[in-house]
Image (cartoon, rainbow, N blue to C red):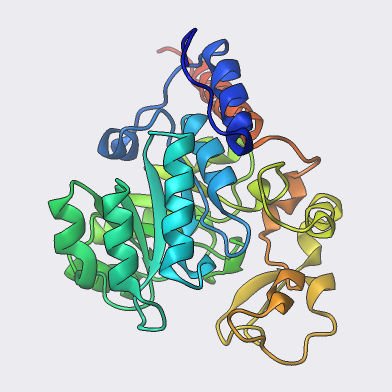
Length: 325
């Protein structure tokens, strides 16, 4: 914001600070098929995490040059979603994304209309047929990527004419696959032929560089962003992410019916799946194995900044290992 411009509402004062700090600390852009497609500086998507990713985190990631995203199942009513989208647009005019569930449990048609009206350009589909939203999203200049955990799902998504895939690997927090990122990303890229994003095991710039080297057009960062000031995770949840190691992550299907990664301590006494709107979900903590690289709570802007700097450094160092003939 320039001199004399109106400052944002008090609840978004942190956005003003983030914009000011970023203006004084410009970095090289990292260009990929995804950044060109969506119009962001860095191929980093803030994972749309259930009960964690709201307007504060989405705005912070987008203002830092990545793509902030929210999960639509966070919102029990369309009015709640409309209010959040309005808050996001007060905080940033940069691209944002959403995770939309098409299973029929949510009013996805109304949610879709609100998102398109708010200028959302990136949609991640989970459950249901992506074809249901493709025409409307494309008509508004947006893109649709599908979460997949296998080649079978990837080919099915391609047949639905999605724009790309999100390779949800075995190290991802929450619902996860069984194949490691280092195998799944190049596997899908070579067999399916669509742009592929890497999701799982990415909390540092070095891990981001590795994913890009595998052929990923972007990375989904979730676990690292749990331990940020803008995350709505409970303080105890953030602390658990910091103190836990990869051996403290348990993969089980007994929480939701599908295989997912959880912090073991949070599900020790789990007996029955909570109802969708239950506060009990706040005490069941998903996380990926990249908790190994989470050391402290930081602003999301700083997390993105450090990842980009580290990624560029690693790429340059790798280039220096190649001898000239």
